[in-house]
Length: 505
Image (cartoon, rainbow, N blue to C red; front, side):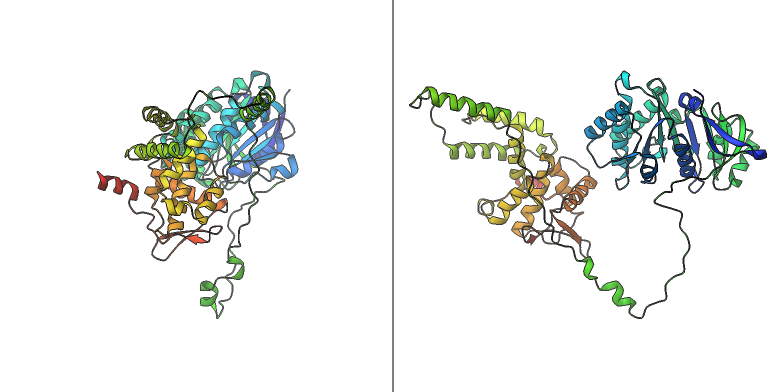
C-alpha cells in the first residue's frame, strides 16, 4: 500500500511528499544546527504518519510527550531498570502501541543505557511481532557518538551497538530508523551511512557543510547554501523524497513542544528590597517533613510455606519431639564467628571493589574453614550483614534507637546501595563528618565519584536524607527520621577507610 505523507511545501507551489512505505525500507537522516527546526520536522512526520504506522520516539529532552494527548502515544518514563525497559519494549512490539521514551532528567550515561536497553528490546522481539515501526531518535549524536566522551566505555558500546543494529539490521525486523543530529561530524559514520534519505537544514561549520553536500551529491561550491537556510527549511534527497536535491519548507504541526526558543521579555522594575528578596528564604522554600508509608510486607517464600506444612505434618505424626543427631547450636557463638569472618574479609584492601557474588563465595569458604555451625547465610542476608559490617558501627551505637531506626529505613532500599546508606547513617548517628565521595565510591564498589554523588541524590529523592552544602563547599547530610545529621565534610577528601587500612599495615 502506497501512502504519501505531506511534509510541507516544495518549489513552484508543489507539495513536498514523502513515500512512507519507501521510508520504512530506506531510513532517514535529518541534520541541522540547533534552532534549524529538526524537532519541528520530526513532529510533522510523526503527526502525519501516526494513523498509518506504529511509532517509537527516543526523546532525550521530553519534547514529544505532548503527542500522547492528541495521538494516543504512551509515555514510558526512562527512570526504570534496564530489564524493565527491555520487557516493556517487547510488549510494545507485541501489542503495536505507539510510545514516547521520555529520558528527561537523566544524565547522559543513564540516557544511553536506557536507550540501549529499550532499542534492544524492540530489536530482539519474537519474529511473530515484526510489524512495521517508525523509530525516531532525536539528538542521535548522544546515543551514537563518533568519539568517546565523558561517559564510560561500557555505556557507549551498549548505546552505539543498539543504534547500529537499528540502522543496519533493523529493516528485516520492521524497524525503520529516523535519526536527527545537530552535527554529522559528531555522529558515528557507520550509523549515518545506512540512511538513504536525507533532510539537511541550516549548517555553519565547513566540515558539516562538506559532508552534507557529499551525501546529497552536490558540488562543494554549492555547500555554502546550507548557511543561508531559514528555520524550517531543508534540502531533501532520497528514494522516499526526491531523486534530485529538493528545497523543502516544513509545514505546520498540531501539537507543540513543552520547551520553546527563548523570547526576550522586559526586565521587572528594580525593587528597593532586592537584597532581602535574595537572601531571605521564602516560607515555601522550607523543606516539609517527609512522611512515607511503610513498605509492603514481603511475600512469604515458597520454602517457608513448605517448611510450615512439613512441620505441621511432623507434629501430627509424633507426640514427643524426636531426638536430634546434631548438637544444639549456640547462636551467640555462631554470630561471633560470622562477625569474625566478615572483619577478616573486610581487612583485605581490595574487598571494596569485588562483586558481592565473589565476596559471598569467599565468605562460604572461610566459614567452612572456621567450621561455623548451622546453615550458611543466604546471599540477601549476606549482603545486608556485609553492608552493616562495612559501616564499622560499634556495639553500643548498634543498640541505640537511631541506629535501629536506620536499619528499618534501609529495608526500602535495594541491596547494592545499603552499604553506602549505612556509612552515611553511621556518620550522622555518631556525629562524625560526612564521608567523602571516595569513601562512598569504595563502599559501592566503584572508583567513580560521580556514582557516589548520584547515590546521595537517589537517597534524597526517596525522602530518606536532606543534602546541603555550606559556604566552604563542605557537605552535610541530615536524616529527618533519625533527628540527626553529619558534621560538615569535604566531598573531595581522601578515602578514610583506605587510609586506615594503610595505617594498620
